[in-house]
Image 1 (tube, one colour):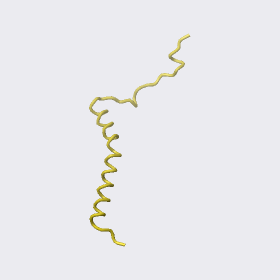
Image 2 (cartoon, one colour):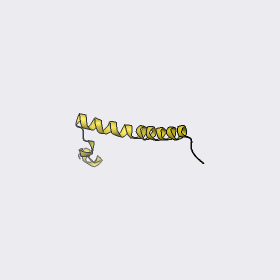
Image 3 (cartoon, helix red, strand yellow):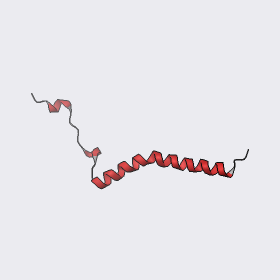
Image 4 (tube, helix red, strand yellow):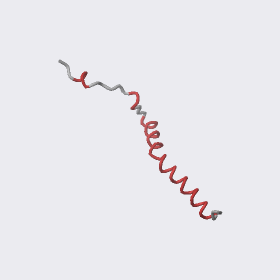
Length: 54
């Protein structure tokens, strides 16, 4: 069964649109980190026990 050309183009367009929508939040996150200089993965975490001093 052969797919019509218009249907084929619409499927390809929808695939690229779906990939763009999926990747957009990730790209925006990386751009935000780049422009603000934030590096949340480098922050040291403190344990709950360290916050309470006897």
